[in-house]
Length: 106
Image 1 (cartoon, rainbow, N blue to C red):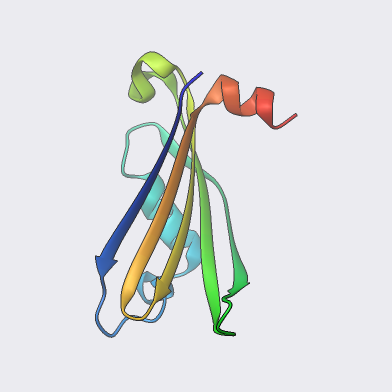
Image 2 (tube, rainbow, N blue to C red):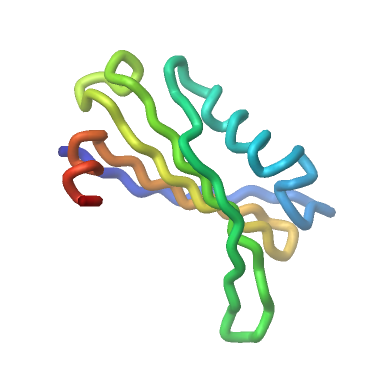
């Protein structure tokens, strides 16, 4: 069972939402197409309120990839949460082996 967590940030001047890149489904499909055999299995939009009272939109994408691409871990599940705030894009990516994810989610 393998699990990783990564956080990425990048400057996105003038950008207020990832939806400028297309619909949430289109963005999820683009993320899934980054690896051969990876597929989009879900996406959703939710709101998050900061302590300051500022409301942000969180875009969540779930992908699944087969054993050939995932290497020694077999199949893998990847969850991404993307937030754009103050001209920065924050992406939190959690990846787990497919078997471990399915065991933990039952």
